[in-house]
Length: 415
Image 1 (cartoon, rainbow, N blue to C red):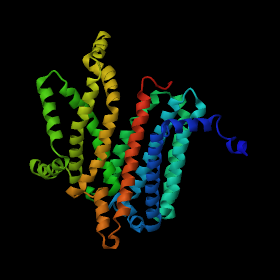
Image 2 (tube, helix red, strand yellow; image 1 turned 45 degrees about the vertical axis):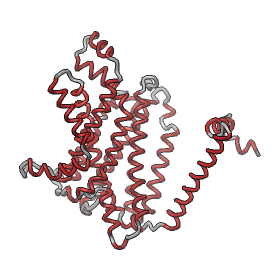
Image 3 (cartoon, rainbow, N blue to C red; image 1 turned 90 degrees about the vertical axis):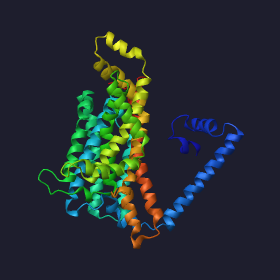
Image 4 (cartoon, rainbow, N blue to C red; image 1 turned 180 degrees about the vertical axis):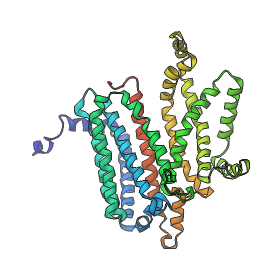
């Protein structure tokens, strides 16, 4: 009987598990007691949460308002644009995933689908199978979810196979596909290529939250790098201008800057030049995040010895070339955890947009909870919001850790 139960396990698995438990959780009597108490508290909290979610909560508020929470008041007749954009993003994400994995496993072609990738694929398929029925979505919508997951995994498999032939340079060139896809998505959402325009006032929900966060993240990165370099510049005007900008923005609360951006820009710029309210908020988020990102990059630059630039100059590189090829890559690798932490905070700060009248995810949720038919169902709505934000922040964190491992000079893949 013992062999039949443990025959499929790797050799020494049980012993390694016992050693790990003894070392990590039960190294001493005090450690064991604390571990048991904490495990009991965690299990009790999970049991209470599951009992409430399965037996007491009324999830009709989420089922009936799932579309509103996702895309706000976006017109129904134009929602095919969002589905098309989702398919494009799924194809791009799957292709990127396959290329990265193929280059990382170029010397081990049998491991193009390692364990973590198989787990991620299983979780993705499970979400696409469980979520549509749980939300009461139609079979057509459920089929689209499965088609999106299938397209992502198909592109992951295809580019994973082709990536070894294309080489490492394919990743560098394929990185340009993301900004092109982003710009194409903006055109689709707003109404370009002869499509009917959709006013930004009708954008809302999770779509607006992700749009604001992605816009700010994409633009604050180059702006923050330039500010960090400007603060270390030998030119007084450039250095003091960067210092004044950074210190002023960091000294002002974000909500104050949002109100200023909504009210002051309308007076300073002529009516035809003043951007819409959604874009005013996006630029304020970008300006705010760039100041904090500049300090993160500056900390990375300070960690690089001066000898690196001197070595670059001794090789015949100019100051700009030394920064581009020697100093900045090392500094950004050092500052990467702080930068990603700032990106996560920026995503969470988008909830402040509801205070200036924009119907992002939290603002839309407040509208739902104000409906007399759903009064008192605050727990279900806030738990859904917490889960959505956690998924987005966890994705950024996982991407950050994968990028850190890839950029680690001691664990570079064999390309």
